[in-house]
Image 1 (cartoon, rainbow, N blue to C red):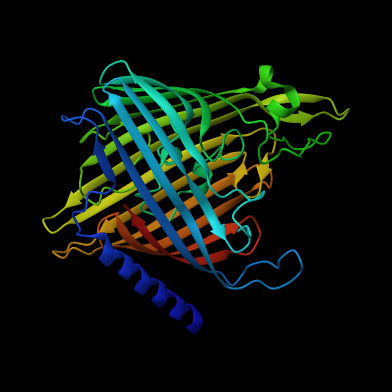
Image 2 (cartoon, rainbow, N blue to C red; image 1 turned 135 degrees about the horizontal axis):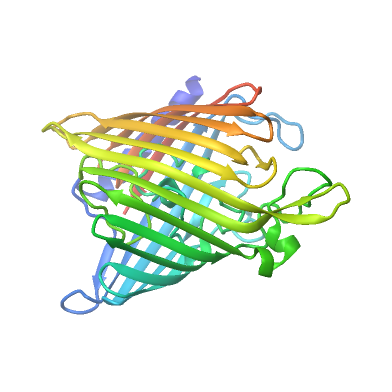
Length: 414
């Protein structure tokens, strides 16, 4: 434990070094370059990185039967996003980066079959007017819930609720689909709808259903793109107080009291014949994948010294097919998730935000439940632009022993 303490202190000192180089607390982030005098033509570049130190004493043996270290380092995310407007009618966005780079998946010379840099989004958009638009490409205009459209720049919890990113690697490329989307708003009501292609080579690209067994997410590969190649998604929310921007698809995790927001939303994801089952004779048939979500988000300042509350609740209902389960992440069943955080009042530029989160999942395949509990503290040195997060997260899956992980994150967003 002493070794872990030294490591955490070291990471904090390194983080403060980067913070001092970053600038003042009112730093607005990114780089916007005007291409004409009035700024109607421009491009903007945003970059961010999240470095993790994790302690977990319950790690399983590696592939060779050796014990693994209790302490591990990783780059959780390293991203660059750029978007440009030629005029008020057209927008193009490009987003690339890497995720979860660690000692087990790094490549000797940064190449090979271990993916590092890849596109997280490339899409173009045409605006019918200031409220409605159509676009297409590899995009992030998702359905289901706010968390399935979460920005990774300003999450309140250490990371997003994993089951809420409900299609990663199953029908899409890391939560991004290839297709067309429609987005807009009618006063306080906002919407996003999408029609997409499902991926063929997904996380189950080598799996096949067994007779009278569980469903396998392989509809496009086994049944063909005509019968199982399309997915449909949508999310709709009503804004009671301050309205949030829908200029980009990324939903804010916490405004730290910068807005007074209360939204309720509902969304869906539908993939006809997305999963496949086999009868006792081995004959294949498709099963529709349907996922629905209902959620509520509240964020508001409290008092006159910078106090603020952030709260979120989600009910999600997943049907991936008969008794579907994959890696304790994707399962036919249901999810209840909630988190709440409070920015402590202070006149100082550094802000502290303790928070708690809780998940309860019902899983058909094991006829049992899974529960998770997390408690953490965010230290905002310059808002979301420079942040330290420390979180303890504990998960119990079915009748297995509970597993706890302690994670320290240092994040810079420019």
